[in-house]
Amino acid sequence: MVDSVKYNDWFNKANSDLTAAKILLEYNGDNAIVAFHCQQAIEKAFKGFMLKHKSKLVEGHSLVYLCKKASEIEFSIKQHMKNCAFVNQFYIETRYPSDIPMDVDKSEAQECIGIAEEILERIAGKYL
Image (cartoon, rainbow, N blue to C red; front, top):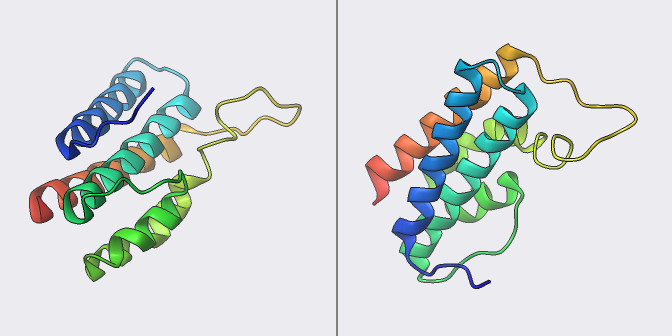
């Protein structure tokens, strides 16, 4: 599989992940999967943003790393670092079974959606 080099493709996928998170939350889906989709939405938005502005796809999945790289293009993005760290914790732990599972409550899932909405809206609305 080859990743798209069209930044709009990344934003479309980011919006799809955010929509999936909202639907899951609305219908009492697994809060951990809601949080994971939010992490994915933010990751893809940052990658789309950097692809647009650098014409190069940045590797990596850490939202903290991607936020830092995006802030090298637009410094004000750095204000999202703390929220990225919060959502980033749901990337791996929510995807695999564990002897000590990560419990994600509804308020955390809602917070992840709010963060993802804000970042996607900011990036798409202000920098594209």
